[in-house]
Length: 111
Length: 113
Image 1 (cartoon, each protein chain N blue to C red):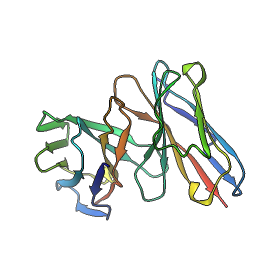
Image 2: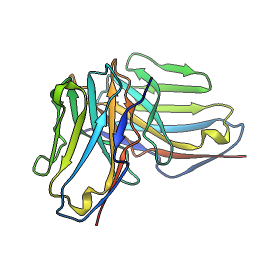
Image 3: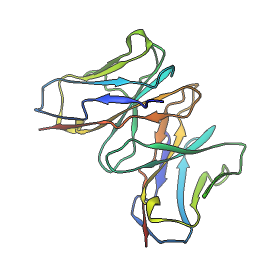
């Protein structure tokens, strides 16, 4: 069974630029999560989707971050404009029955 | 809001000994608690889930305990091996019907041969 796929694996941008990350969850998993992991910290939930509906986005900085999950499968997370403090690893996870399966993450560096 | 504390300093254990990691939480009564392993450059990998009505859970060399009175979980690795070296994350459900997780900072475990 293929795992959660994410791309790109690495991204370097200047502050105030925009960036987008893509996630393809495990086939059949209805729930998809985006987490932000700053160096030395645990992952922080940004948004949770159930199929293509948002379940929890209470910790998503909505003035600059947006996410969508069209057709209830793939998802994209966008940051516009990026700030220095957005430098982190962005992890995507999916689940079917509660156990979350994480992708390898996208490491974002904002200069 | 939920607060989770793990000893984020490195924990050095000699090979063959039992490693014990601690997770304390406040301001919340979780329905369940999970432990994950994370290696450098990789996403977390699920290890064990323990529910509020369970005292102990085992899986091979792993054991998790859950004390809802003390608001504490202990994670044990018996007969530890150098391959067990990694960061171990404790996570609680966020409640309210959504099952996104709140993670601790993690404990970096080093098993020395």
